[in-house]
Image (cartoon, rainbow over all chains, first blue to last red; front, top):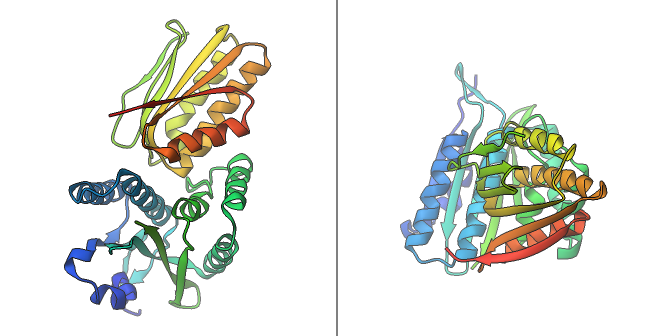
Length: 187
Length: 126
C-alpha cells in the first residue's frame, strides 16, 4: 500500500512562504468535535489578544467551525500501511494585512469531489440576494443529513465572507481525491 | 407540564422552557456535536406544549453564536411556534443580539421572513 505524505504537504508551497507571525494555527490530525472546539478556541484567543475587531473575530470563528465540522462529518479514511485515518484533515489559518485565510484539506470520494466542485462553481458568481434566497430555500427544504450537516455551510461561508470560495482537487487514487478548500475573510 | 431545563456548555446553549413561569428561553452558543440529539427534547417539549399553550408565549432567543446545522433546528422550533399562532394564540419572538453583531440581527430578520410570527429585536452589551 502506498505511503501518503502529510496533508499539510498539499498546502506546503504557500505554507513554506509564510512568516511565523502570519500563521495563526497549522494543524493536521483527526478532526474530532473536541479538536474542533480546542482549535477554534486557540484561534479565538489569539485574535482577541491581537485586538482584532469583533465582527472579523466572529467571522473567522464561524468559518472555522463550519470547515472543521465538514471534515469531521465527511472526511473519508485513507489506509496507510494498515493504519486507517478516518476523519483526518489539515487546517491552516493565516493573517495578512488585508485578510485572514482559512484553508482545509481532507479526502473525499471522487463523486463527492465532482459534487463539491460543481456546487462551489455554482455559488461563487451569485449575488448577495441570490445567496440569501438559496440559503433560505435550503434551510426550509433541506434536511439534516445522517452525518449531521444541513447543506448550508458553503453557502453561508460564501455570503458571510463576500469573497469567492477557492478549491483545488488532487486525485489520490481511482476512488479518492484530496479536497483543498480556502475561504478568505477580508479585514 | 414539567419544565425543560438544560445547563449551558461550551458547545450547547442553556435552555429553559417553563410553562408555569411563562419563560421560554434559549441562550448561549450552539454548535453541538449532534444537533438532532441536542434539539430533539426541545422539539418534543414544544410539540406537547402546542396541545395546550398559554394565551401568549414570549420566546427569547439570546444566542451568541449558532452553526448552520443548528440554524435548521432553530427554524423547526419557530415553525412549531407558528403552528401555535395559527391555533389562535399569541406568539412573540424576542431576538437578542450583541449590539455590534449585525449578522446575528440579520439572522433574526431572515427567520422573521420565513415564519408568520411577530419578532422583536433587542440588543445587549457584554
